[in-house]
Length: 448
Ligand SMILES: Cc1ncc(COP(=O)(O)O)c(C=O)c1O
Image 1: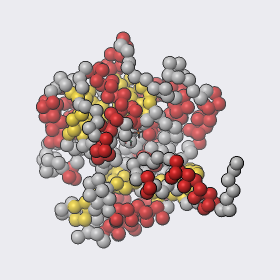
Image 2: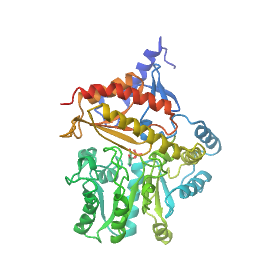
Image 3: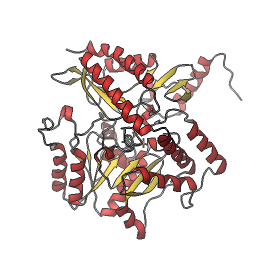
């Protein structure tokens, strides 16, 4: 029976309360969950049932690269649904074959085959297995400021404090200090440091036993742990170090892939070829769940005559792959990789301008439509506006005031991640930047 409501607010409240009562929500104390009921979206905007309209300046979870409801992807999903919703992975399908081939046309040229999953964490789970099977080694080096997903293995290879609750996690994980120039863990400054942080990884491989370390996994530009862009030497040198020890280099491009940073994949900014690349989010522009593990020809050859101990009911789901094929077409047709580069430079310019006016901005960094500002109470001491793994009233206030003004910013601890859909216009960027500019006055008042 259909419920009767006297007004839209009542109806919205009904569904909000139903969510609260029957759904477990991620990364929150359940009593504090307070999501609005989202009913639609278009381009860089989405809206809720009560008529509030928001400019989505974080592409939801940095995944809606094509904005909301891109008509070409919607149409591809509709067509695939009419033709064939599902067959299991043992059968071949047209969208999966096409998508895997198309990926080799944009990925680093050494990458050959893709194992499709339903998201990033699952892709990492399988990458861990492939790396261990291929090398016969067990240990994996990752970094503290990293996030690779919330399942057991993916959480274990993450350094993000979200892992604390589920530790000790899977064995064999060794964490390295980060490449974080603004707060160098070695107390050095670039370029005089000679990129000490990457040599530290070499030292770790030596200390852990070169024939024991199967892989080093990194986000080429760290996402949710601070949006850290490495200096130009970092990734090429890491590639050299990994090759020297026969250790695989795994590039997790879940957040940085598909044009987010102004290149198809972030590792391509430095011409680095990883042995394994992890995909999700932008792969289907988040319009259906999809992830993938791309492996090099060498690893692929290895499995030619050996059993691949891996499987998923939804491996390369036809609907998701059809969305992926359409999404790739749209990136090409709308020139979105190039657009991310040029609009990203513009956005970074706006942020650098704000840095001159707002003493609360300690650092500005970014590449493509992927940028961050880090807020501090004092530029000299670099005391963060909110502590590591914590919040502060002013950071919360800026987020909620921006929402009231119709702009959604991703804010974590003392930094923002600006990652709008690649289809955003310059005018929409200007609008978000103006709202930010106005609200940073609140943070400036906290500066001492
Ligand atoms: C770099 C990176 N890897 C992996 C993941 C996990 O992806 P998923 O949430 O699809 O499992 C994320 C999610 O934000 C991510 O940012």
